[in-house]
Amino acid sequence: MSKIKIIKLIDITRFSSLDIESKRRFNEISKQHKEDFNKLVDKLSIKNANIDWWINSLASRNLLNSDLYESLCFILLVKDYINEGFIIEKIIVNKKSLIKIIKKITNNKTQIKLIHKNFYDRYLFYKYLFLIFQFFKRNYQFLICKFLIKKVSNPNDLTLIHTFAIPNFYNKDRYFNNFIKNIDHEYLQNVYFIPTLINLKISKVYHAYKNLSKFYNHKLFSKEKYLSFFDLIKAIFYFNKIKKIKISQTFYANIDISDLLSEESFNFKSINISIESMLNYFFIKNLYKSNYKIKSFIGWWENLQIDKSYYFSLNKFYPNTNTSGYLGYSPRNMELQLQVTDSEINFNVVPKNIFVIGDKIKDKYYLNNNKNINIQVAPAFRYSYLRNLRIKRSNNEYTNMLISLPVSIKHSIYILDMLLKLNNKINYKKFNYTIKPHPLINIKKLLKIYENKLPNNYSFTQEPLLNFFEDSDIVISSMSIVLLEAMSLGIPVIEINRDEPFDLSGIPHHINPLIWEKINNYDELEKSIEKFTHQKISCIDQYQQIGNEILKNYFEPINRDKIYKLLDIKN
Image 1 (spheres, helix red, strand yellow):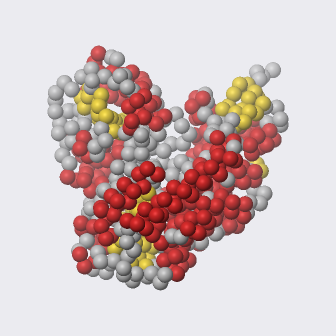
Image 2: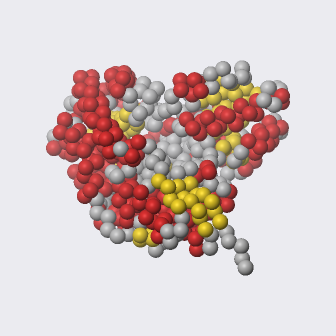
Image 3: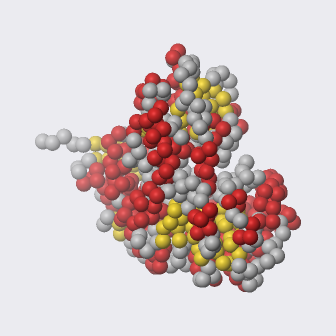
């Protein structure tokens, strides 16, 4: 008689709690079902295809803002175990819809417990409280903008460039660095920048617009200046329009997931993005009503809701405008939203042209999966500094480590705790650690956590990473393009694999492993550091050769002709 196979617990709310076999199975499922998931969302898009749909998280396919695909992969994991004769004693879920689905899969033989991830899911009151706060904050934002920013005087033949502004970057351009410097003055007359402000605190609104106004000078085109009080009301209450999204009975892998889709459509995690996206739509609509003429539109493009709202409205109100999307970084693994679907093309929510920053990205990434898209290479503005740096190699007894922390406080703590454990060993006393938090991290909160815990060889900095690359022997990060930047300079890197669902690595698999390693735990981290420390001088030439190839393939140099092509200027 065969032994009964029992799994005591599967906690869908905490991927890190899964056993090694369940994690392996989940990762296999997530890789195998990418295409089917994109087809599922594509099919749903055909039935909706209005602005309300495109700005909803259900249509986003972005794994960082929507956990729909994660839920589907967990459902398939449970199904696989049940089909193989396993008995699962208890499953913890974070969505009501999953209870019904899993009960059916397990024939009601499994105890299911519902845990809400946050109070927005638990209490409707908090949702409306958040919306009221958004209303007052954005109203204040509108007032400050109308007071500080002037409207554009010449409404004809405009070239609008959509970018983002984040804290500590209101007086510099993080996304289109060196763009204006390389354009002849005669072509700049009607070029304007539209920044979307991210993580804007209400106390920093005046400071943000004052600095943006000073930095962009007369080149700032603020959408808030062209929006009305009623536009804001309609955008805030987009939450109430979600009911109009059509979700009929839908099956995925022979499982009825209709309730899961309905629940995801009300995902409050991305409601702020939906509000911003709806305002984009009203902004373009108002420009059209005011007889503004848009010749060309270029947007920082990741195929997110904010992007889709711009291109949907432009194709509706300005069908003859040349629209371009600028994918200004090397995409990570599992960025499913970058695989443009047929419905996104057919319903005009993607730009007519997509520009990437390297030949390898053009040739091998998701974008090439649809032959109806015009893909071209443009300069890597954000990374133009890479060609001006020269790494200093020293054979001294000290090793300089540069740690670039991710945007999550939780994952930053995970990395720092691992490194602090290393420092307890005698041979790691001769290491210097420079720690650069992500620009969106609250550095005061992080410093408070590690108050009086950091050794003397640890230092935090808020300066740009480029100030430290030249003296760095090893760079450590997680899910960051920083690692590709470092390797392009010939610096070896270590990528720390976070105990989270999905492989969001920023390192292309084909890059020579001599210069990089991916680690999963403390022991592997220690071995990788020892490896790179011992060969930091002996492998200099090989590192540099690998770096030169990366620089050539992934970071297109500044080229005036290609800038003009991006701007649709016939020079």
